[in-house]
Image 1 (cartoon, rainbow, N blue to C red):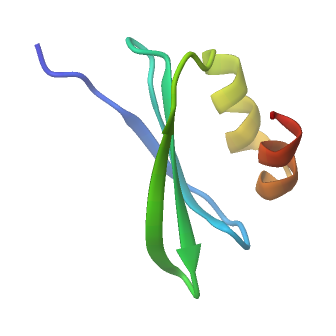
Image 2: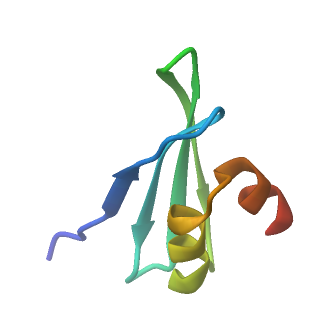
Length: 68
C-alpha cells in the first residue's frame, strides 16, 4: 500500500511547503531561498494538529520556531 503525503505550498519568507504523513506522524518542511526550494527536513512523532497549526498560522516561521 502506497502512503499518501499531504503537501501544501505556503506563503512564507522561509518555508516553501509543508507536508504530512498521518500514518507515520511525520511532517516534512521544505525551505526556500528566493522562491527556489532548497532543503527538506522531516520531523517524526508530530501530531496532525501541529501540522494543521503550521499550515493555518499567520506567520509560518514564528509558528515553527515556537514548536521547538
